Length: 250
Ligand code: PEP
Image 1 (cartoon, rainbow, N blue to C red):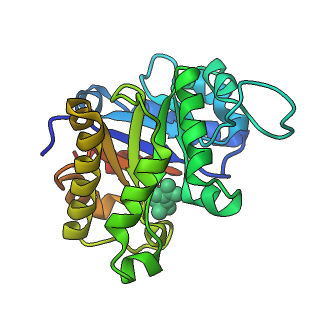
Image 2 (image 1 turned 90 degrees about the vertical axis):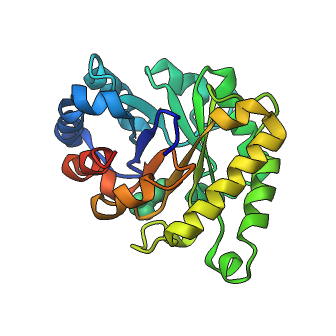
């Protein structure tokens, strides 16, 4: 088991209305002293709920994050939200490079790189997602893809205090399918190796999360894998009972 303090992050995606505050409150109430001793906990709601959740989270130590940010601090970018605006809500984290944004919004590695730098500029911790498609895995290209994504999207000067990597096989997201534990271990070991090659000792301290169909029933096995320092959870983060169940797997 890794010595790094784990973090379990919930990605609510495009889900949540004002009425969802009750469910979020159940998460903050469930983050009790026992759980706090074991793991960090964060929820990334849609932008519309960031400020509200940041207020609800006060005093609970549950962390709040955005799901994306623009590369610029402000300006003529209709519909976009900057890292500074996210930080202004009280959020501390922001997801960048999620595969849904890489696919829907053509976020290339270069764009993700710029967004990770924007996060750092604003004092946010970037949760930077990488992961292979099913065709890439079937073609034996997984490690190569991860290496390319890391090299091209992680900015120089990244530290364990401003960057978290999330390994999310695209085919495992929302599908109910996961890689085997050996495959997860292999991918995380490779990511760790790349981080250490580039950042030296700092790379040993960067947290690497696994994401893709994590649920209470598989969390304890996945979270026990070497170099898995937490989880990025989509669907199972929407209900407090499931999300807390995953966090309790530590
Ligand atoms: C995600 O979208 O980051 C994710 C991991 O989704 P799910 O847990 O639903 O597979």
